[in-house]
Length: 387
Ligand code: NAD
Ligand code: MG
Image 1: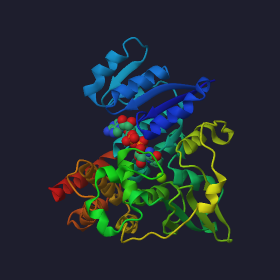
Image 2: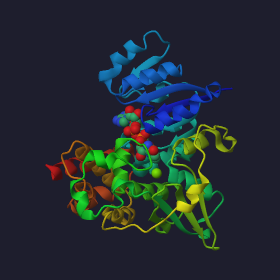
Image 3: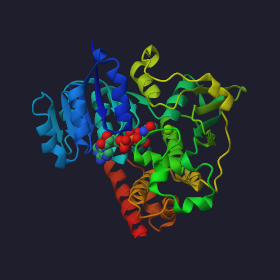
Image 4: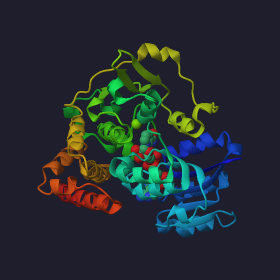
């Protein structure tokens, strides 16, 4: 029996890597739905290559074009806010949730309803909506597998381990393109420089988050949501080679880590195949690299974003949602050259000081609506602070 697959955000970096893994083993997979925001050309290309039954192009402006380009195929084309629960009948085996931003939250919830297993790359939906996702995960008995390389590693390293056995959980950071710059030099960096990650090829938003280490702020919050370990146990370390993604230091003196190449196809194929992983389309690790691995503490003068971790965790509730929304706006303002690179973290810090922050941040999110209210406030506030 072929495994039925859905990919949310198939035209992005993680989505394409997932299809790359599937391509090597097409006879075992049936792709039943692909979704994208506006890149209809890539979506059409993928639909044709994988004989996909359904595609959803979110942005309605591209609906007609998608339909036109697929008119000779049996693929059904959907658009807008239609729920994927109305597209898919019955259960699928595996959904890759790889939309960028909190925009992926509703689709992730729907994916949990229709899937036996959800590989969760969309970290923003975990950061903002985990309390809600968790209810659906329980109700629908869906298996959740984290795809983010650090979280995939923590999951692998802590199977069967309790909090009282763990001393410390280190999440590594490559340090991005600006690791060896001075804080002063960061004042005038351009989007093109910030996007150029030394080790990974990723979407634009996560590349900017990696350049100022906001990605690590989100990853610690993400880990605190997914795993049961005490939130004070997390620490960030710089590891420029990105071969080790997480390190667990146990109370009994043992330290565990997993190494793998900087290729997201490795965690992706592991979520698809589990231990029966037979896909060999990933580069083998060069053991010579072991002589070159190094680790160092983070210079918080260069990466002041890391101070936001404690602030977010101390507030809890909707503070991570506010930081995420503000950051999404700031990253797009930076990409369109409306603000400087350092303004991203500076503005997020200003949000914490706003007179209304507490009112929005300290509410317990019970529904998507609660998240949207805080998210909207943060977006408007951020824009107002930047004009
Ligand atoms: P990307 O920008 O390359 O792709 C994003 C995908 O989401 C695209 O298919 C796009 O069409 C879709 N999309 C964007 N906005 C949408 C909207 N409003 N509604 C519906 N679909 C929308 O992003 P990416 O780098 O593949 O990252 C995807 C997610 O995975 C992010 O949450 C990121 O943090 C996480 N992640 C990525 C990597 C990586 O290596 N790229 C690693 C770890 C985690
Ligand atoms: Mg990561």
